[in-house]
Amino acid sequence: MRHHKRWGSIVTVIVVGAAVGLTWSVVRAGQGRGSATSKGDGGYTEHRAPGDVWPFEAWPSHMQREFIKQLAAYDPPLYAAWNKRMDQAIKNKKLDKRSEMVLVVYMDSVVHWALPVIEQHIDQAFDAGSNISELLEAIDFGPESSTHQVHDGLEGLWHVVEVREKAAKPAPLRGAPLTEKDLIPTSKTDPPVFKWHLPMPRYHQQARERWAPERAAANARAAADIRKLPKALSGRMQELITTASDSVIRWPDPLLDHHIHEALNRGSNVQEIVEVIMVVAESVQGAADSNVAGRRVHSGVEIERHGLGALGRVIAERDKAGWKSPREYGEGFTTKTY
Image (cartoon, rainbow, N blue to C red; front, side, top):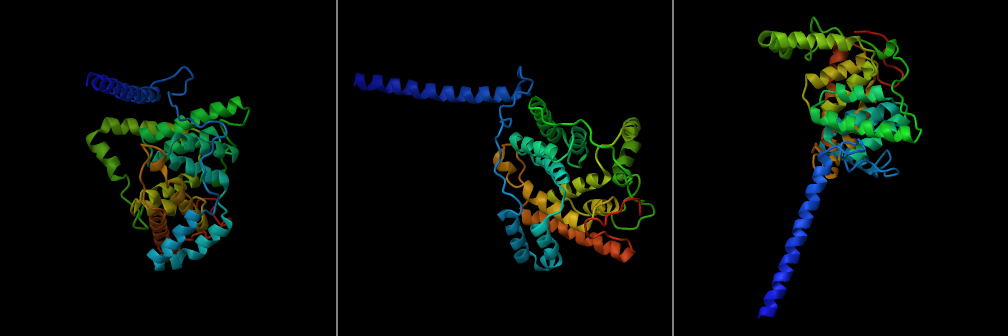
């Protein structure tokens, strides 16, 4: 009996010891993530390793093709309206790689993909001709920018630049100066033309001016100072980033419609916007499976349905008002038109 008790005690000690050891390893891993290290990497243990590539399927992926099949079954009228343009994107997507990767990097940080994925896409953005200032401005600018999102995006940017510089790969601070067609200003919204023309200044601005005038004045000074700085992100890309984000989080009209109008007014075209919506509908899928902080998003077909529905409304409004909607690549506005 004593022999059995002795062995039972030994087994208990072993089990408890293993449990404590496992718990301590988890705690140490958490501490390592949350504290700075001598390498200056912010304590992250999940940085992308050289040669480590997340296995994304090349365009057009099976997932993207399934989104289109689902749209045909789920919303036949919308599919009928857009199937030719979606098929054109499947067969010959023309969205330039640099723009695509800037958009994907921004959305990666919004949905909190695991850091190795964000870094992989930042690396691809540099390879496609982007630069530090453009990526930083995109991450800072977007409508879903927050402390958490900026943390992920700029953490990844910092690490990728360090790795590329050590490998003697280009990671330029700035790109070529933006031209007139890159800097088309926003369209005139007073008097209103469309439903999305909201009171100017907006109600959130009026609230600050009414109840916190000192804060409103400080915000206005900061905004004026920022406007004086050289821009790295084109007006077209600003609107495409917002259109992509609003499609993914299913932001309703009038604001989603507003930014699609502005994308068309500032150099984009209908086919490009279709391709942007299709690309980000796919790129955000899986973030929650890669990272405990990953954001769960709507299915790809729901995202595409929301974005394309808004694009259809915008075109109908513009046609009725006599506003041109550039349809194809090469037809976008190069100067302010509206």
